[in-house]
Image: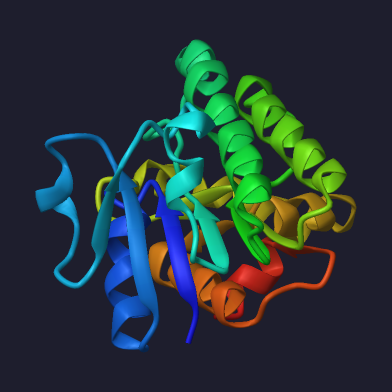
Length: 213
């Protein structure tokens, strides 16, 4: 059994992940803002704090041994460059700081597949968080999906023909594999596996590995 602390527990992936962890016997606490407690599944313990400010919640992380950072801008698009800097970057750096202060044994972080020919404003903040993780001394699993398909997140189906074309061109197959689409169920299964199998050092989970779930 893991004792898990989650930031972003009321979001797109968090709402799916928490019930599964609870059903598998793990203890789960989630950081929420005042007024958001009711959005958490039954059995998940709320902790009040600001995900952008480590000092507001670092003292709440213990006695957890596992920290899952899921905070991010919903439905990423090139128009959200400012949000990526103010939310994705700041919450990621805050998570690293809080995890270090709490003596967390294993950090699980959802990054993004890279390099990529587009969405640089989205990728750069997450690369910066990855660098902070690498220099923190924490054991960590970093998952790198490109886009996670699920309810309300299905527009990439429109560009599936482009993926089929890339997959048919030998020189593009590596890019096609790295930037492939994954389903929400696959992503949640990969997160559960990461929680239950802590890394020693830094472990990177790319799209092809996420797709195996």
